[in-house]
Image (cartoon, rainbow over all chains, first blue to last red):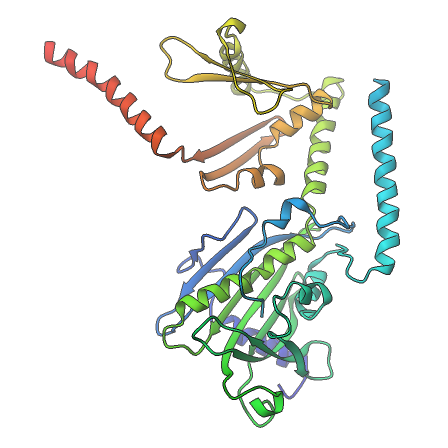
Length: 86
Length: 347
């Protein structure tokens, strides 16, 4: 990206968003790792070797502070495996 | 009553002390998770992918480095390089991608990333990466949409090409771990207990005002008929209940069978240190965050609540009771149908 103008960023975003429609109901298959608050799904597009992955969740956005301590209830919600996030 | 007031004041004191302690600590501890969230803050969380808490969550950071290698001077464009160790027999993968964020509308942001080609600028040698490391690709976007004042909807979409002929199973694992960012995000901004408490307090307030005659709840005939039906069912004699083994010595459990009925009545009794309104509100709120977590199990196939007003809601819970229950149900239905068949033969 040579220019840092907003229109370039918008074009970049539109280009990526046009590759797959996250809001389309068809083709997304729910993954078993979903829980009550986070829905994971995948989609295979014809001609592509691998699948698209999708995660949807509603995040609280308060104007108040959360607990300083780690929440015992949510600790187990995070899947642990041998990889790391990109 | 006095002891209850004392308990309440002690609780308030503890809460205030904790609040002060948190403010005090957050000034000195860089990693203190402070949720002052909004769509902008959620976007900032994604943008700041090299923050201390997110790097801390990275497994084996030494062998899986992630760094900024370029970008424009603006605050919304960066180029990253990231190396991921792969399971045997795959070589490590190198991801070089540029990311940017922009505003889609007044209520929506998007954060996007796409691979950067191996041009003159970002070759293996320039990045200090060994020749055996395979260049892979990742692209995707996150949309963050405001939902009122208190929450936002986050949709995270990604595509990863590991450059393996049959890479589906590896990609699945990678999807799982990458998408787990959303779980971390939810944990960072989590307010489940607080939101449950706010909702419960609203309901408690409605119940107290109603009982004082300040805001009378108006019940329809259909709603009143539910009370009549439940009261009839609850009219089972105390002696009909046989005690059941309870996992808690303070809790009494019992079961009653009524002749001619295939179902059983269960009863649980416990003394709770709360007002009747608080207990009623806790039980009435079937879709609280806490109950959603409790019902987030394999045997709960579906759960939904449709609220009509502050005193009436429809609840639907579909549970898989397992093979034994299915066999028992099929046997019971066969027993019910057999006498009919016999009667038909006699006729």
